[in-house]
Image (tube, rainbow, N blue to C red; front, side, top):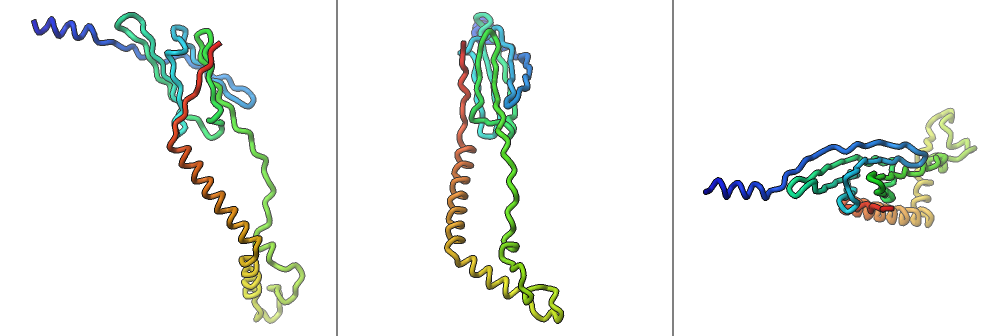
Length: 188
């Protein structure tokens, strides 16, 4: 009698067939598209999310018959080259297209002259190292000029701006690391 009860309980359990869907990449200017071929699935059987660590997780599960189900899990590392906030997906005719736009390249800026180059005088014979008796040092003169720069209003304003940037960057970092976003799937 116990085996019969155990047998009916086992029949009630679902069995899962895990599979790896056929995936193809389409490289385009400004974006890459991952196409998953899922002919037996519907939009509501799919879930796409991106974690705070940059892992794109695509899962799906459908019922084959009353007790058997197919399911898959596909994980992709989203590199810093992609704009993870604008990743979107579209499901049509048994194909899930996940579009991952690339970040726009930032133009390189010319390096600004260093602080020392801005402070040093151009044509002052007393401040050059080529002084013949080398007893005169340029260090006290540079220290005096640096002191003037540090005490200036422009320097104070710049430091306040740097402080705001640090606080904003930290806030963005915290938000990025502690929120997980989901990718919405569009359908034709």
